[in-house]
Amino acid sequence: MDAIDCLAKKVPFLWLNDHLEKTGPALSGISLGLPDMRDAQARLCRFAPLIMELFPDETGTSGGLIESELVRAPRLGDYLLQGAGPVLIKKDHDLPVAGSVKARGGIYEVLCLAEQLAEKNGHLNPGDNYTRLLEDEVKELFSHYTISVGSTGNLGLSIGIMGAALGFKVDIHMSHEARQWKKERLRKRGVNVVEHQADYSSAVAAGRADAANDPFNFFVDDENSIQLFLGYSVAAFRLKVQLDNLGIEVSEKRPLFVYLPCGIGGAPGGITFGLKQLFGDAVHCFFAEPTEAPCMTLGLVTGKHADISVYDIGLEVRTNADGLAVARPSGFVGKLIAPLLSGALTINDHDMLKYVYAAHQLEGMSIEPSAAAGFAGPKLTLGHDFSRHFEDITHILWTTGGRYVPEEEHRHVLEKGKILFAAEHNN
Ligand SMILES: *Cc1c(COP(=O)(O)O)cnc(C)c1O
Image (cartoon, rainbow, N blue to C red; front, top):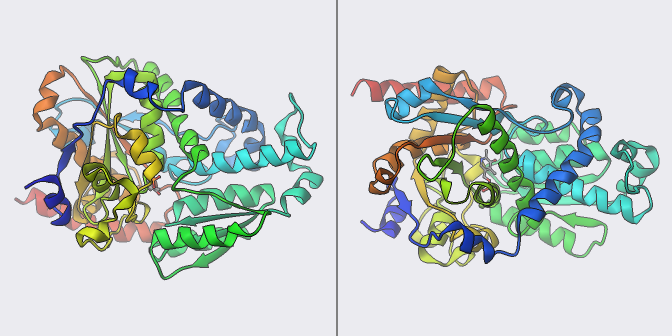
């Protein structure tokens, strides 16, 4: 079966990217670079005192940095790989404030807008403490502006929570799969949630159209935003420090294999870009998508990027992984990462639910189904010829959402996952 057949027939598989290039030449062909990442990192540091003031319970101990832990996951490693190679988890499901990987890109984009408006209106000068932005006159300024975005749930949460906290009006256009609790969480903070009975691309189009004729309305463009992308890329700086602290060597002989759940591609794309900047050929990134919505893989395999959708090959995007329920990938990200990505894998809903249960049972973590998409990765890559070239691989599962999932909802998923987990053990 070729790759397109696997995608059309929903057969889970690992696709290896034959357009992968050496990192050096690949990066030199991209207009963004390390200085852009450093600029984003510096901006997040400038905002840290303000974030700490706004969210003291969640970010007080980290000094206003929104970051997650990197931990060893020996029990999960045994289960997934029978101990063949260390497995670590980058716990972005636990990111404060937004509870998902979107806390990196979405919040960063709101901060960019706030900084730009405040500077333009004389409320921010070089060297100022950014807590100045919480003063009444600045809030009054922000209250004249609306931020709009289309979302399957988590991007809306990150942008809505940060936007509202700074005093912006926020319109979130939610696609049909968005979970009810995410909408309620936003409405409680005064965010305007517009519910669409259509898919993610349609919700994005609605937001874009709303904002088009209003100079006071900023549309956050998940399909094309460079700010979002750079916000995600900063994760690489943080991961490097964490790997150093754990004493983990990263080299071409001892590479990192990183498994990143992928929807439209911004989050895993930005993280991949950042990791390749810092680790070069010593890191191999793999995107993970539901068999029901493998939009980025389809775009890469066909070379058509945003000009093809999973509907075109007969799929319907029926998945529990709401964060990944996207039919058409970002063309901007697809083209940019095409020479940097080592491969992509697909996983069905049953396996994601089973892994949500495994994560809870073996490592005590509460994650949403989307966040488990990468768990199929280590076994798939290890079973492939190319991994024989490496002596020792460190596998990193990037868990992308879950911190604020209500207990009741999580229990529901765990019940389904438990049955699938048990069935596997009885075979
Ligand atoms: C959005 C999301 C992703 C993927 O991010 P994209 O930028 O859409 O590719 C992964 N996991 C979760 C939980 C998400 O909400």
